[in-house]
Amino acid sequence: DCLNTYPLDIPKTKDIKSFDELYKTYPEFYKLLFRIFNDEELDKQEVDNRITYFMTAICYAIQNPQRLKPKGLLINTQNSAGKTQLMGIFKDCFSELVLTGKTLNGILSDRFNGYMINKVIVCCEELKPNQDYEVLKEWIDAKTYSIEQKGKETIDVPNTSIKIFFSN
Image 1 (cartoon, rainbow, N blue to C red):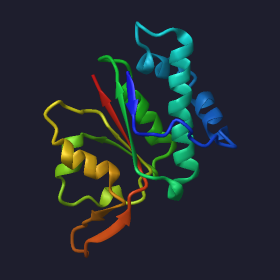
Image 2: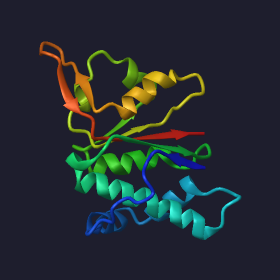
Image 3: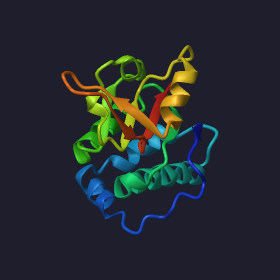
């Protein structure tokens, strides 16, 4: 199941050529996405629709980083579907724009969060039922968030990132 706060009418990207390169560099990329989005109750066309929706959202975010409204995508998938591998590919391809490798608890509890500056996509692998949903909702929806770095003044920056939560 793929629940999200993204509008269904995501603007169509004019140029998805960066992902053509991604497919060339990682030939198994589509199979990886299919494993992540596959559900026994869905036919192949519905899985393809979910993959297209996801990739369109990612492409739009990468190509229009300052035009985003903060959004969240919850992707419920099976164990060992390839979430960590997907996050690694995003990190390899878009390292300056993507934050991966941190748990949601780690991000929400870190006092010093300078690593969040200019991140367009934030991927978290662990979304647990006992999360503080009010804090989570505020983090997703807030127009700005505070960045605190050691030895520097706290600054408020626009919240223009997509938060992607993978959960089993």
